[in-house]
Length: 325
Image (cartoon, rainbow, N blue to C red; front, side):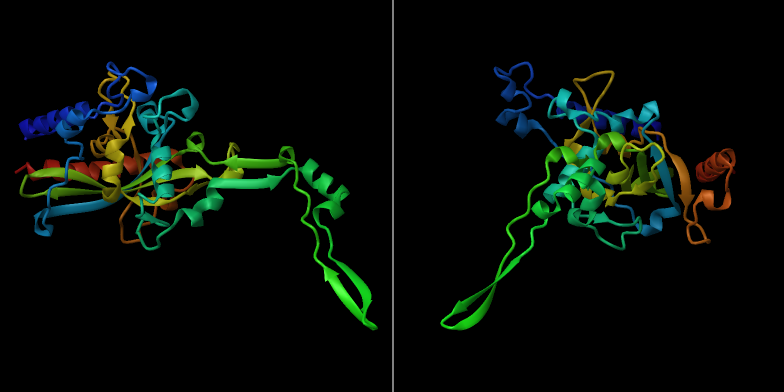
């Protein structure tokens, strides 16, 4: 079993090496050539994520769905968070949030939902108010009040005689004045405001291979709304849930920074599937309607962490018990 896991890790490492983040860096004659692969490289690259193996329902001896929260303030989770300012990095380096939002906007990611049970689909247009907030500051409102007729001109009614008859004619109002941008407060939700990610996954024991396995099902960015961005006391929301197996090809093309070796970056698909992050369990499927840990361990953060650890150990102990006679 250890040999099989070692071979899997070696295969993934080789695949990540072929997807060099800065292709043609040493051969580029101009900066625009950096990142462009030659036809020979494109042919030799097997640039696809490692496919999941088929698992028959009868082979699942035990299964448990859990939800975890990944806090991006933890150092181990930094590759999911940075870079937050893309003005000082290359085009090949983007945060996970930027990758998700960019591909939702372009329509490449379509499996976007409002909840973690995939009941209601969402479009970017429906979520646009969460990403952008535009408001007029106090000084701008005062300026509008002082020049109200300029911004909201009224239609004029004139009376005139035509062939001896009195005719009333209404002249439409002219377009109102446009407020100077200095009076407008516009906030855009970006990667810097991310608090973390919620992840839904499935732990199961494969009786054919005799081991405990994990399959990620969905991922959700947790952020404040655009209007509350930058406020330390702002409430955070689940921005959207994305069905993970449907976006593996996109995440395979995007790479997280490898602090040890920038020549071999790791794809977000590999990073998440290999669980190279730290998450805290906040919910498991249960008879109480999948209630969260904080719903029955109230006002006690330490007990919530202990309960989260208990859920983790319960799943891990099942595999250990399978080999005890």
